[in-house]
Image 1 (tube, rainbow, N blue to C red):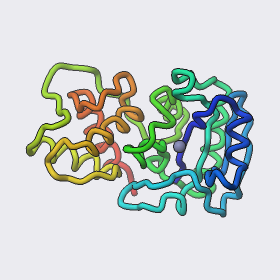
Image 2 (image 1 turned 180 degrees about the horizontal axis):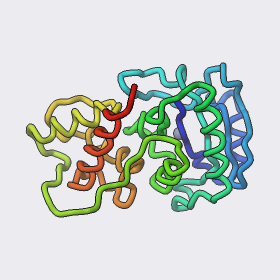
Image 3 (image 1 turned 90 degrees about the vertical axis):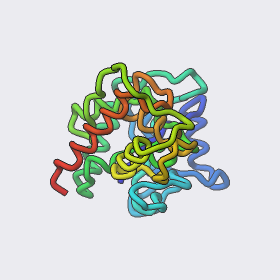
Image 4 (image 1 turned 120 degrees about the horizontal axis):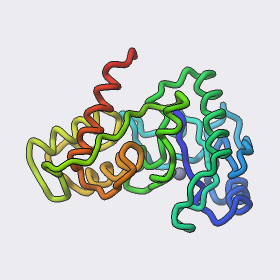
Length: 225
Ligand SMILES: [Zn+2]
């Protein structure tokens, strides 16, 4: 797998210092700077400490099966700045290279928030997943348009919720299928929206969110595993 992060620190220098500090106990295979420079921090065959407690498709040791890429971006410290074009071009180049060498499936390119939805929000809703998809990187469908209809939200229960949870889980998200729109389901909904329906990230599974999920799982099932 490839896991994308933002550094979430005030500067590139601060991020690089932290990623080289053994006592910080955090590391990543690559850092991509705002100008598009790619810096290797850890050999690919070594296990980097970037994912933390996480889960995808039932796998809970993501660090052992992934390459971690830290993208320099201040995130919440600077009100979620846009990712500059040269930086995204470098991310695409790096991902394309890694994907080709390990035959990584498109749906195994994920954000930190996808695998740790209750703890992490990076690389954030400003990250241009659609732009990467246009370059042939990652798994993506056009977000379904906003429309009126039943919206599933925190506290609701029933078969509709169970079905929604099943779809999220079948795509890979780690959640419990219990028919309750609980805190975990809300956290996963936020993560899903950050990645796949970024125009509104509110933790409410509206028609657009559910339809985007439906289209995404359909697209996955059409793929040749
Ligand atoms: Zn992260």
